[in-house]
Amino acid sequence: MDKNIFLGGAGEDYSQPQNLTLKYANRHGLIAGATGTGKTVTLQILAEGFSAAGVPVFLSDVKGDLSGLAMAGSESHKLHQAFQDRAARIGFQDYTYAACPVTFWDLFGEQGHPVRTTVTEMGPLLLSRLMDLSEAQEGILNIAFRVADEEGMPLLDLKDLQALLVWIGENRTQLSLRYGNVSTASIGAIQRRLLVLENQGGTNLFGEPALELADLMRTDANGQGMVNILASDKLMGSPRLYATFLLWLLSELFEELPEVGDPDKPKLVFFFDEAHLLFEDAPKVLVDKVEQVARLIRSKGVGVYFISQNPADIPEDILGQLGNRVQHALRAFTARDRKNLRLAAETYRENPAFDTETAIREVGVGEAVTSMLQKKGVPGIVERTLIRPPGTQLGPITASERQAVMTASPMQVKYGTLKDRKSAFEILQARADQAAQAAAKAEEQEETQSVAEREFATARRYSGGRVGRSSSRVKRQKDTFATAMSEAVIKELKGTTGRRIVRGILGGLFRAR
Image (cartoon, rainbow, N blue to C red):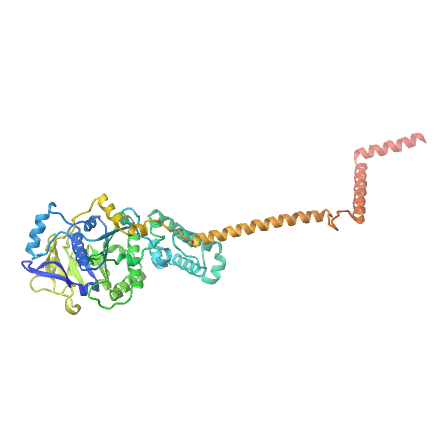
């Protein structure tokens, strides 16, 4: 087995091979450079090299160019002769065109197999980062996860979380006594953020079947590592969703994979393109988590490579852990650019043959300043390197070619259909239905009881199956009737008509007398 990945030719005449040693490939790396300097091609040839060595790869395709890894290069390509000349110049005698085994993934399920996780697996920290919640709102979210765990309610998709938040709002008085203040304002704010997340396509991320990490770590029948390509051109429209998903994936790898120490080659290599999106406006607790994962995940056999325009985009504590570096040209148009260029040059082990800062400024397209880890993990001397040409297709494949690759993949059967098993939404809905039925039954019983009370009020009672009236009741009823008639007569006599009747009666008596 080849123990190195050939990157290109170094030295004054580019005849000295510059290799990435597989044994140290899990010590992470950096690919940096201004737009148009060749970062994508460098990523492409590294993916080819890892795949050929039997190492699975996961990378994000931000511009759609990396789908060409699924097809072999062609002699009819306009750069065919230029590639042949470069291969000869750097002594790349084994240069041939060959495709890589590729699996396409897509959070939206359009340009690849759907990628899903559950709300529970995402966790409150990353979900809070995804929705940009305040500290108080994050506290409510933590309460929701605790309640879901205690009540045995799985949180699989967004509707589960939304239903649980409604339940928490209805029971906030009892929950506040146990967990602290649960305000309706915070719950409402989270619900609104969930709505925004839905509008950005976040609904597609949450659900089942959830992605199994083992499906990212496959090899084909020939022993080549699978190149997993995440379609990210549309995903970049929601940069927070993009960064949070990749960070979740990295965290899952860290938590699930066993310790392997220093293997002869990585178990998986993870390329994080547009890495600056991960750290922009990120809270310190999140940056600390990335640093922890980057520091410890290498012992799980996973190499992480950050791709960004400038090394300054990466926090210093994380940048110091990136041992394998490919630095394409940096432009220095402003004072800040010059400062970043100087700082980038100072991170390399000096080469007496040239000035590193000048070299970073002057390297052309397809060239780079490189430094790879050597024996015992010692950083190598910086070299000016002419990057080797790719063996796969340069540029994107057609939609029909992509669809053919997807159809032939076993992942289509496994992840193609969304499943919706019983979870928090269904459990809470069932509870609500039961409560409604109980309320309806209680109302019916109350109605029946009210009828009985009315019958009792009218002195109806049951004795031996016969219904009758008591003598006392009849007497009371008669007394009541007589009293009522007397009152009516007295009232009438007190009125005008009564006075006329009385006068008539008395006048008749007097006349008769």
